[in-house]
Amino acid sequence: MQRLSQLGRQLHSTKTYGGFMAKGKLSSGGVKSSVADKTTAAAIHTLPRIQGDDTVYVPDKVNRHNMNPTYFLPRAAEIEPNAKAYIHKGADGVRVERTYGEMADRVLGLATYFKSKEFKRVAICGPNTPAHLETMFGAVAAGAYVLGLNYRLTMGEITYKMELGDADCVVVDREFVHLISPEIRAKCQVIVDDDVSGASKPQQPGEILYSNVVQQGMQLAKEQKTTWDNLHVQNEDEDEILGLFYTSGTTGKPKAVEYTHRSVYLCAMSNIIEAGLNCETVDGHNRCHYLWTLPLFHAAGWTFPYSVTAVRGTHVLLRKIEPDYIWDLLVDDRITHFNAAPTVNNMLVNNPKARRLPQTVRVTVAASPPSAALFNKMFDMNLHPVHMYGLTESYGPFVRNYFLQDWHGATGDERYALMARQGFAFVGSQSVQVIANNDINQPVPRNGQEIGEIVCRGNAVMARYHKDPEATAKAFEQGWFHTGDLAVVNPDGSIKILDRKKDIIISGGENISSVAVEGIICKYDNVLEVAVVGIPDEKYGEVPKAFLILKDKSKPFDTDKMIAWMRERMGAYQIPRQVSVVDDLPRTSTGKIKKNVLRDSVQAA
Image 1 (cartoon, one colour):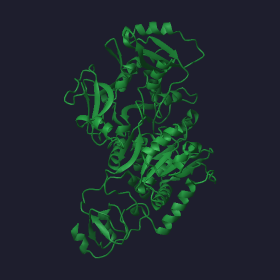
Image 2 (image 1 turned 180 degrees about the vertical axis):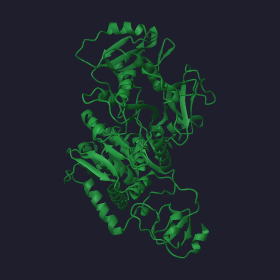
Image 3 (image 1 turned 60 degrees about the vertical axis):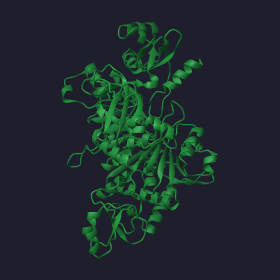
Image 4 (image 1 turned 30 degrees about the vertical axis):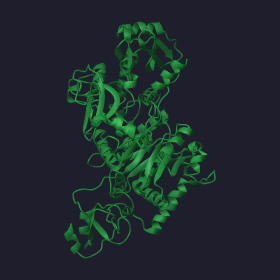
């Protein structure tokens, strides 16, 4: 690299979206260079952070670049500016479509605005909208990190999370602006997105409209001649925080999980492989159309915002779950991928518009195991479920099941039993084990019988819990991340999850997997969904209780008949001692059933 400095002329970039050959001083890790022409400049395509004079510094290491997933957006816009970046039906019902060129221009403006205001911690509170997606790129490109907030929480819970993350700015959807408390408003810039195609006005003092911020930022970028090279698409330190994403808090206060640029980048690349996002043909047909049923705020949308952008796929953003509208999108916009909990999938397969699709749609199922009936219905409609496993601390799924060649002859329940396993670690995850007795040196045998805890390490593990060294140290005991999930290992080495540690029911000294009992009950006639929890019992310590949602609520339900049916299919100690039919079940933002709430309701009764 030293030899480049002999060439004699300064390099200037003319690229709008990509190239990263910037006019400016690099802050570290470089060798001063004056490059003769753009041909030579192409050899130094990746540059570290710019600080702002007219000297070009070439990185010391020609064989390495720091990883930042924001880079995927200007890259997509440079390769194919006219490719469709996103589709969205706004709060006013108007459909909006933008290309990658348009999205990149908007995000460049947004980042320029954030940087001019020196925002460092940008919270996002709202559904899956263009503003949410753009801010996930724009804030990071400005050198800030993002805070993903669940808009289904209370004002107090939102305030707690924003204070834990020290937010100095929040982009909030108009529908949920009431969640931003007066104390947060006093120390945090509030940017409101109306998610409409027409003009609107701020409704409270101190609010700024998102649409105005984007326009002001785009004008500022034009005046300052800002390019992507002047932003933070290449970090000095790839282990810097990209964002804070929060646990559900089912065992106490929610924890803020630190995500790094490096791990988000690598997990996004893993998603491309494991979810088959790079599905287009050599002539450009059948490109990824990703339907956003998964909340963007949840675990950074499992890093799929960056994965889909990397393959120049189309983000189909959903403001809310509307089964009729989803079926219209599946048919008319030829959706290729989506992620959904069994709750959403149940709504889809039982919708009047449900039909067999001409295209195969890959459906990631991860919140809880789907029933055999749901699995088979989805297959019949060409919705191919791929069972995965993960958690917030692992950037979303990091283990998945693979459909093996030997399984092609399997049908019905046999196929379900094989595909309901969680499977093997992603290609980007270093290692996953199931250990007994909390001893990292004691993996459980591969017999599908002995239960242990899932532990993991590698690129798909969080950096730490934010401001919580004690919880971090506990989670990282013995040099591995302890998930708290219990599983067995099958003879072929695949993992099958049985339960959370806290959800396992210990009755008279016997371990009962609530998941296993639920899987059997779901096969009973007229049962749509079930949750099984342990309730106190004087004799056995705990016994199972089942909460049921019925498919047809107008039909009478005979509990005694169901109990008799269960006796033929499970051990007596596994049969629920109590059964309650309910209209709904408490859920997390991703559709996972809150069993702690069910247990608390029993104890409070």
